[in-house]
Image (tube, rainbow over all chains, first blue to last red; front, side, top):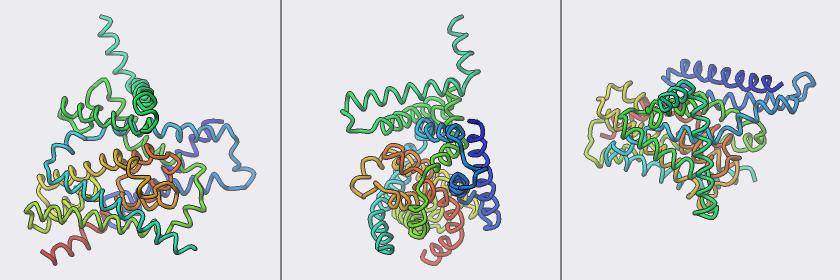
Length: 121
Length: 254
């Protein structure tokens, strides 16, 4: 049933966010540490289990696939609720700091990508 | 009377209104993409850009901090685009992701998070100093804001920075997030951002979950799970490093 997929997805997200929250507490950080990432790993592991009881039926998969397909619309809504006005009215220093940080990070991607690939070959 | 009814129906069914609104916006964007750019600019990139423009307009009109969602008609956009649904959809994209690619790039992905926090912090700090800030707490807070708009206020609050400095750090983080959303599809071909390996590194270096989510959606949705995976650890690592090690470093230098 479709709801099984949605429920599995919910279980993974809540578990991951909970673990991320606890990780933050343990590390003494006022923020969630990787909750969504942990949830993604959990979903990957659970959906790849080969045991017969946990094999997802195509209809169950639809419950996950729907939300995966809703990703772009949700991101569009996310863009529409960003505080763009205050980003642009934060003054030059904030804009320069943001732009420079992005430029430097972009420039590092090819460098790190090469480093990582060389390691495995 | 009809107008009153319309208004009542739209705002009591806010989430459904948001579905219709976003659907229309996406449709319009794909139309613009096909007709005006001949498919050169991806439809979702245009949709995200239009969303940001509308968010700017919302902030201008209402003075609130949730963009278009502060206009009562569009309150549902705030729910649909909020952290809960965003994270839910991001987790869903992991379904069908390639475990092998994740394992292979796991180490360099983790390294990229630490390097990403450090580089953004360093650049943000240098910009703060060049704009005349000399107080280590202010420089650290603004540097942390250049990491993400969550790391900035968390760090500033922990160190006892003034609210004006914290506001600046949030603005720096917001600028970063918006720029990553808009800039990624244009810069992606130049930096080889077209495979799971570089997407993992991209997520770790950029770190802003919203920016990475939007940037990859507009570039290649297949890369989303890889970039999002590392990006979601970034804010936590930033909140760990900025008020401690990085702050001590700044204090030693200034």
